[in-house]
Length: 241
Image (cartoon, rainbow, N blue to C red; front, side, top):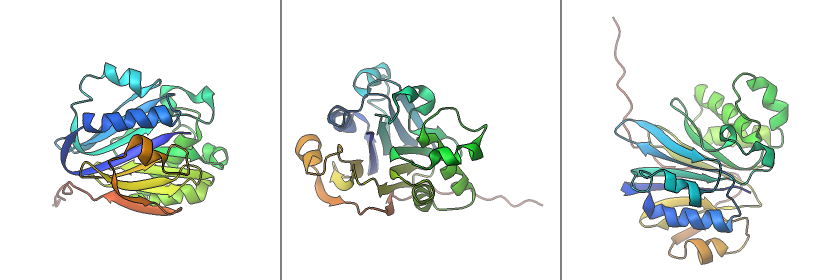
């Protein structure tokens, strides 16, 4: 029952310009069991983020720098887990590390428990999502492009899955395969945005959350695509010898 949102802008924007949309997604999407916001820090060349285990509406106020945090890439996850026993920071998304960026999931990966033993020693929580995250990291390490690595997670672990990834070079990718919470791409405040649809198969996302959105397009099930291209130049390769 989670909701997620990603946004790519041409110029840096403060997060508070998205915050009202995030609040409505949380309220109307019946989330409130954890939240996370990640963004691209282009000066540092890395993805940064904050997370909490309760409601975004309440806990985000405890991060006074979040509202004014400026970036050209944002990814937000609002949690309503399949198993309430997993409401803990270790299972709160987006998952984030310096090598692989940030990743989040809406849905249920039905073969996650079968795959869990393969990641023994690497898992800190108990949710199916973290198994998908570690599978995704292995795909990146093997050289798979991020949007195709998202597809690989969905195809290998099955079930219903919407996935998103923000890389340290600014590439922002999504995979849409949860038929109970379709993903929509639209333009909002000049940015390219993709979000889930409140688990509602009508136009409620636009009637109640983002009525000002334009260029609305529902993503095809199974679509894996880049929403934001890499924005940082790769680090130079230094010759040795």
